[in-house]
Amino acid sequence: MVRVGKKYRFSASHRLHSPALSAEENRELYGKCNNPYGHGHDYVLEVVVAGAPDAVTGLVVRMGQLDEYVRREVISEFDHKYMNEEIEVFRDLPPTTENVARVIRERLVRGWRAAFPSSASLDSVRIHETRRNIVELGGDMKEAVTG
Image (cartoon, rainbow, N blue to C red; front, side):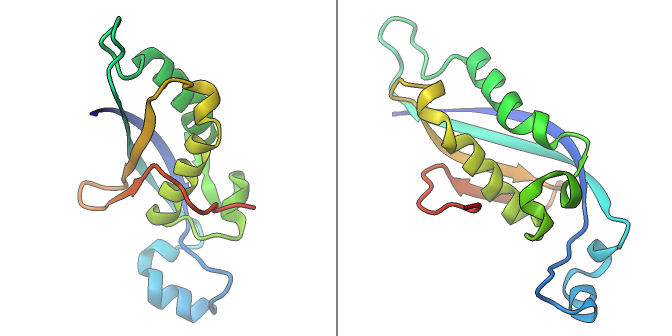
């Protein structure tokens, strides 16, 4: 088994705010990230694919094909968006880095087999919100974030 990864970048803004909490609880929990006007990040997304290299090409996955898939399923939907308003799932779900990673993983897993019918599988998704804040999730998804 070989693991191959690729990095992607997107910029997006968000406000950390849970509708299940009071305004005071949100301010206490999220601090400056609860700013009513939101704030932005230049995110780095790492997508890692695992599988056996093809006997003919020596590749686990064609990078151009992976790039196209990630751009279509994630980057085009997230880049330069205010997540709370422009990405449906985040209207009721706080767009924490943990939840952003889960939603991105779900989007990638949803059409993975159709896009990559070979033995390559999504191994993990890692989001760098800042240089110090990183969230990583395995690619095998047992539960859905959205219905």
